[in-house]
Amino acid sequence: MKRSSIYLVTILLFIAATGFIILRYNKSGDKKSVTGYSLLERKEPSAATEEWKETRKRAANLLEIIKYNPTDTKSMISLAGIFIQEARITGNYMYYDMAAMKYVNTVLSRDSSNFNALTLKSLIYLSQHHFADGLAIAEKAKAVNPYNSFVYGILVDANVEMGNYDSAVANADKMVSIRPDIRSYSRISYLREIYGDYPGAIEAMKMAVEAGLPGDEATEWSRVQLGRLYESTGDIKIAQMQYQISLDARPSYAYALAGMGRIDATNGDYAKAISNYMEADSLVNDYSFKEELSDLYALSGEKEKSQTIAKQVIDGMSADAEAGRNNDNIGHYADRELAYAYLKVKNYDKAIEHAMAEYNRRPDNIDVNETVAWTLYSAGNYDKALPYMKLALKTGSKNPTLLCRAGLLYNKTGDKLAAKALLKQALNGNSQMAVSLKKEGMDTLASL
Image (cartoon, rainbow, N blue to C red; front, side, top):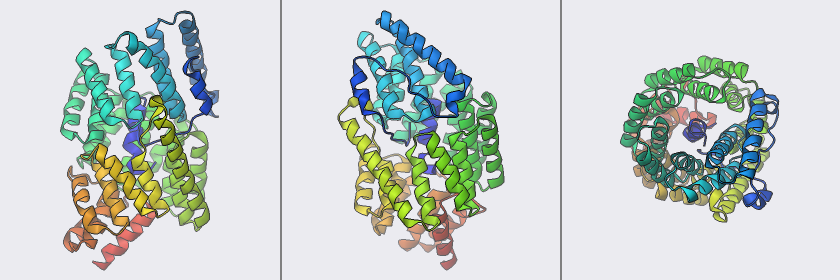
């Protein structure tokens, strides 16, 4: 997945919810609001695993219990948890968010301070990008049980998304002091990355991987994130090794396949990159795979295919957002993702419109400020973009894509010294970023 989406997907993994992914669902699901939900069939190869057999068995047992005892709130919480995790594995967030929310709200209607229901509701809100709501519910859950490490993890995620980075650090410290594990180490890693400490981020993510069970989805997601960190620091061979280890431990793991695709693109093998992304896209419903495919087709000279896929992404995200407006249980915000999607079809007015909609919800988040700055830059509004880019740089992030974009913008606004320094830092070594962006950065640096 692209760097702008990574953290949201990290949220979706470790809190079993998320990021930056808006997905289709079967409209017949609306009819199930009074009759209950069941698990959807998985795609191969995950459909053949023992894990899936066990998950189906557990869900069937819980549904049977609830059928005969509709006041069994513990079973409802357990079933909602399965739905949330299944959303992470399959990518069917629209369906499973609605399913989980039904049971969570039923429990909360009977006991408004039920800790487990509150944490799950917060997770679902974060999955739907309702970050302010997720933060408020997590704070309520913490008041019920201030000694649970999991709720501090949710608070880390929600505060990061709202741009409250000091609060995120404080909650991460509290979380790891209660329970040092894969979830707490991964959050420490991301916070270190936000503040520009790549060696520290790599160290913490290694600890997360080592704390997990090889082949487990959470472990392999952590390993993929470790690979992304190596990509950002230019250690492409080590990154590729991490993706291969992940594929060996969990065959056909979609996000490891996408990692391999990025490596292929870096090496100029667009045909192989497209093949890896097509396989990943066939396994998990994730719009970011289609976005990457759009870029790859453009790079390989297939402009018509690129534009067709880009328009499909816009249509799909827009349809899902519209569905959310008609059903509070599945309402996803997708404005940041739509901003980048509209950039691909050069509709700058719509890109800026969606970027500003996201900014108005969370003006302190560095990624959101980067999105606003980049949409304005792409439209040629350089002076307007500059304040947002300065805010995007406020934590000292050394993300190569951010630094390259900042360098390009500073060049356009006349600060050649700052532009040169930022571009040198962004292009130092073999840091991973979009091929077209890297070329623009290199050409600009050569002219300074």
